Length: 309
Image (cartoon, rainbow, N blue to C red; front, top):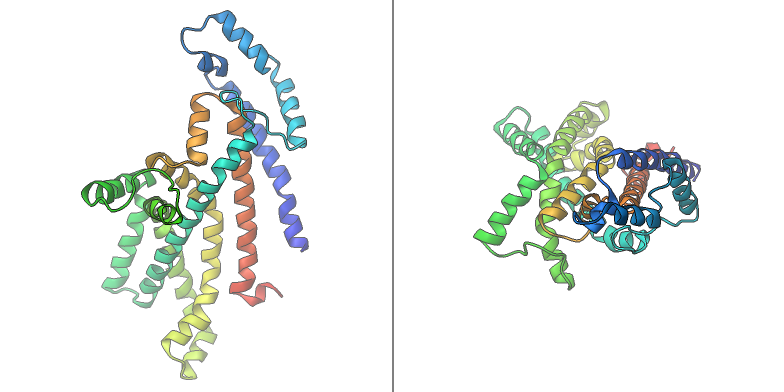
């Protein structure tokens, strides 16, 4: 419990540091939220009046102080463009993005781990080389390219899956998740396969594995009960550390497949220079990454009982 509490406390400085960077970086970049909201035909006086109403004419430190006070009261502010509480927008967007990220993680593990095991067991054979080439092709191709290829194949050439949206019924939700999850997960397949192969080869060289074989245990028992569980520790580490990458891949996939979520939300907010929404998405992203890394640490104790000790 102390470990869990310590990791949760890391949320505070991590979130504050990221918030400070994003807050000041967004305000030194070119672009004016008031001008973006009023359009190109707005007069300078109208822009100045709107900036005064939104509090954007205050010094940067004063704006940050106001935002920090609101954040201390769990108030993320209101969208400058939509005039809706940021918490409402995040509550609507985080579910689809988190679901897509988790499904992409499942795809990367389900494909990457067997490829890595196959490559390790058939080391230096054509199966090893074929599995390695297939795994590396996933990380070599960006998420949006996988998305476009899948769209061309399964919505135009063979129209069997939806090309956009998140679905309304449970069946439609599952069908709409298939292509974005594959596009997101393929990007991490190569890394997970290589880590699995390297880790399993290292474990298979240990004395306890040779002892298990000497006792007459079959390959399935040796790999499944003895070697693979210990080999999964580095894989869990990679999955946890790359959750942020998968989250970014989900954001790209949401744009390609026109899905609701944090990707669409932050893209629209960046175009409108909607500072509170951008900061809100950043905060929720940091929290999700830290919490998943905590969950990864807890999974260590399941994969390797020595960690509990």
